[in-house]
Image 1: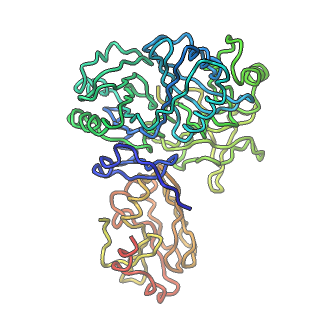
Image 2: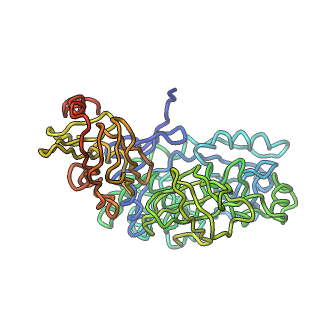
Image 3: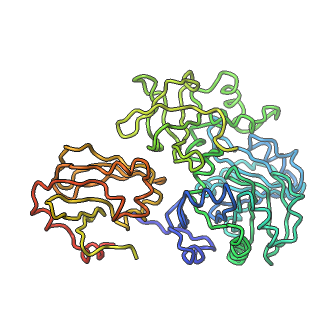
Length: 363
Length: 126
């Protein structure tokens, strides 16, 4: 079976930088350049530059845009101020997740939403199906935008070498629109998916290579290196961030995933409200936990979690934490066992003790 | 681009084997294999005295990305396993043909080694 993989505007640059490209969510993406652990540690200590142009974008525009978003999302978007962004889930009526998203507000009537690559077309169809009589348009802008993430303690210093935007004035989940490395119309937001400081930049696709090259050149003396999806995954797991298809999915709700803070029951109505409310009040049947192992073996997606000889859950994500130098991961564990200190995980026939952590491994 | 030393024999599954003067053989994974795996984090090797048929799984090498089986190039009994890799699995990335050898074996059927790929034939598979 073969499918045609999409390429980001930075494809040629990836090849030039020696990236190893792999299929991911229908895209040919760099999984690593020099090595996952080295790229991971660069983000924790200096900075890394990620091409995340596979992510989708939709513009929501119209008189009823804010009310529409409040009705289809779990978080409250009508209270968002222009120039600010908010993380939210979009749920099915049964509480399962359609996607997790970041919503950027440009004006009273205009928003930009960042969508997961694997869900982008599903999300756009879903949102359009819910418009009804609302005065709102859902515009597919996936092809128009490229996205870069510059992450790490030196990200702001490096980005400031390529833009005159007042970066220090951007608060967490705030953004400005302006010029970066000579490219106008860039959305620069203080957000990220690594647990380190940094920015995400939405930029016109045609400007992507120019901006990426400028950032790499400006950042090289400070230790900036290109980083791939492999490091992006280990970084987000250390920081405790969910990944769609792992910690959240059509069968794992935000309540189960520990994302109840994104679900605003104070809103009278939104898709999924009743199901989520029942889960929040009665307790969900299973919940996502973070864990570490005192071993070298990684417990990967699908590995079974046991309490004694009873299967009580399964691993959702697993990697080696380069900061802790031990395996970490997440698992979906049945109610009643999420606080247990007696759980084990089966790795190719060996049962290893699973140590549940209530805090992210990196903050 | 990856190194394929001329003095070794190879499998299509990217193990190398070196026939030693004392009749034993040393086995590891190739430079191409370590590059494809990425950062190696764990190696599960068999105990001394265990036997494997040619093509049988003798262990596991694990990287950040994935766990992969290790296949015995020949029918053999384990004489020594490289326990040093427990503490420095990353040696596989740095010295795949040197310090990161994995097992030393006694061949059960020395004729099998002649069936393996030489450097040119292995290079042609990459």
